[in-house]
Length: 321
Image (tube, rainbow, N blue to C red; front, side, top):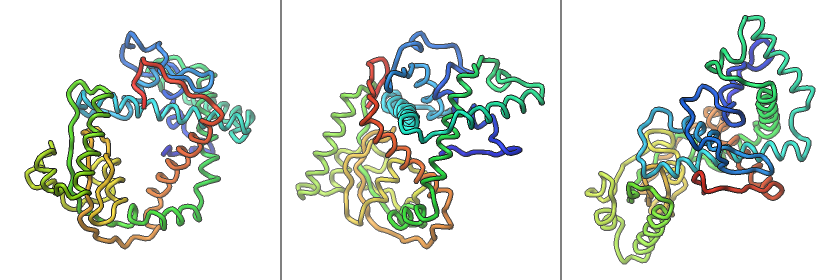
């Protein structure tokens, strides 16, 4: 979720620059790759370049070392994030529900005036890279529009309702889980991931139909260090050492239930809930986490709705879902 930092009545330029890469030419990038000018996807008539997707990927990955086998999956996720934002902007323009030209004008004026008063320029904050006023206006429009949507939809009533519906995700509950992990081959091709998912589904079916047990299947098929112990991981918190997709899937299960195949950067998992340890937190205790979760939900729903009106087309120059 984007955090808006208010300074002297308007939002800090750093906030805008933090996500400018979603919309603009390269900022503070290493030497451009040869394929950066290729188009990864189009949303309506607007192209998303490989350079845009590469920067979004860099934001997701950070300084972590990534197994080459899961890189295509991460690349697809990075492109998804850009596509969703572009769809929301298309929704805002189509419905007239976004920031007004006057609001954008006023914010751009305040931001540039603040920089001028400090004897600085946009290039000072972007490692010397050129940022046009059009680029800045585009980003200001996104920030103001998204803030407007959050104010409209992220209300106390909605936060409390989301908490009640997903209490286990937020109230401090801990879940004891076991899992079976199928790791992809080093080439990390999309077809290999599909094969792993089908294989995991077949293993799940054999467990559910009682042709084998979860413990036996883990010992036979899992590539995780926990395989010898039947896949047992023990208790995990909703937000802790496990990656988000794994935790989210685990906390949606009832004791004894086995998840559908879950893809993470480590491979494809089958997760079994073994035991629940209920939490005691109230919705007001976890407001920041609820706001972030609701914001993600809103972004997803708005983007999905706009796909009915704005075409999204992908190329083969960047992995996609």
